[in-house]
Image (cartoon, rainbow, N blue to C red; front, side, top):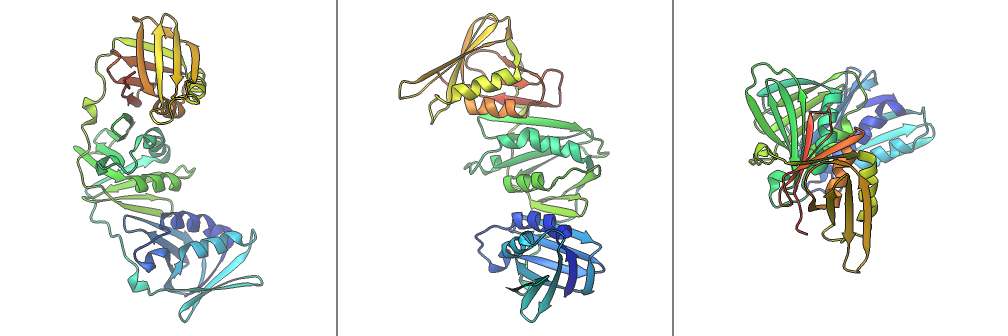
Length: 367
């Protein structure tokens, strides 16, 4: 195999595909990238057996077709360190791959191509096309609420729901929930749900770039494949049952406050400095047209913030994990925010006024 390419054409593909490769691997070949060159196209594949990313770059000068596996991080680091605009040649010589650019030469060890695994996706049961901005919004508005290393493994990911009318993403760690819905016509689809693992969600978020092209989603029994302009991401699905998210959404909330999002975000940020580092609890006291935010810690330190709000309900004291409130206010992009709650022991429903495609639920804490 031998091909020549300019540095910039393969820089981003190499960086994205290398991101999928884990630093510590059970199989040595999983530390490598599978590089194929044929018909003016170079494809680069990386996998950790759970997630696989393939980048295909056209318009490459392929002198000799073939395939090889090359150490991922070493190749990516070499490529990134070359000067801008450099012409780079890659050639297989015996059991090594030679990378040349100008007066630089690098010889990298290779492993047999037939040892490289293929995370083959089964035939898709559901295919849907989404605008890139729509999929990006689904991820941005919900992924922060995914659990991390929870024993309830089905929470360590994001629920993807496809119906004939919409595509919906839901994430929860058992203490808070985020949901976002994008209207999309998928004719003939009743209701299909799949749990995309945390790493698959993160790599998908890295992959999506500014583009006007649609993203193709193909959902199989145990795989999700996402295609976007030269990239194909395949991820295994989590085998488990996601909680019934609709029962978590508060249906009756007698008290509602509306406040300026930025003002609240900064007030919570300041109060969080003196909150208990373990429990992160803040007390919200609602009365009249103001909310008092209080935090304290075992060192007897205290923080108090008073924020003007719109509120016409009975006086109420309720506690929340301040980090959860900050996360929600960080992804809402409207000037104001609405928080609705029934009483001090019920979950809060947080929404952006005038925006009905996303909502957030945060459980209260005992004061």
